[in-house]
Length: 236
Image 1 (cartoon, rainbow, N blue to C red):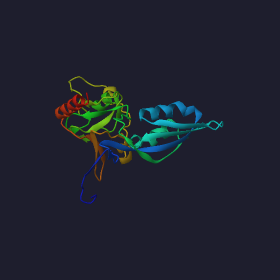
Image 2 (image 1 turned 180 degrees about the vertical axis):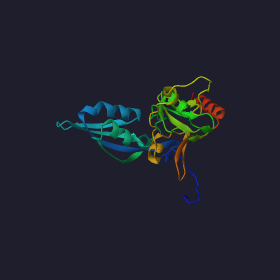
Image 3 (image 1 turned 60 degrees about the horizontal axis):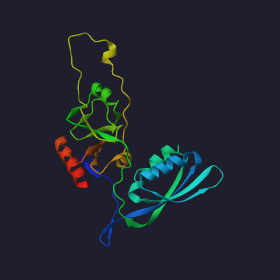
Image 4 (image 1 turned 60 degrees about the vertical axis):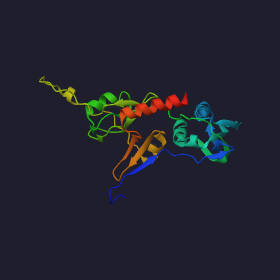
């Protein structure tokens, strides 16, 4: 594939479900974590977001705590990285398959949204300088983007359509060097593993020999809005 220049599209990882007595059941994992006492509240909050149930907690009296949870397997996708970040690399975790339980409903483990390009073209430093105030960018200046491509992570929970190709309007006024130089924060380069953790149900990953790109399943902005509206109406 690398030699021929083929492209591979990867979706969000999904668990294997079963139908038991006419109802959808999903796999559950038995999770064991060993953490310092200082991170007890943080880890408990992380597991609450993932609909994890605490089964047991043991305080060893040495400053370390062991906690055991029963949590949906799909909730642990991308959890290891966030767990190590929140515990400053000191936490230990292990999980093993436990049993199947009825579907626990929708999980929203990522509190942030996506910055989605609304048109095709090369990115500009002027546009990225304004967008970096909205969140973390995944692309640098001069990168070719297309409509529906995810160019960054929104600091808010919802998705935002942005124009990363916007150029500064030229005038006949003389510019100072301060106007020409645009301060840019280095963009975050996402690996395939990080992209899989970041990806949501309505997003996918394009893998080529040269790059890894995130994009929406529905590229057209108008059609994507209609799909979102239909999904909200169906859930309500």
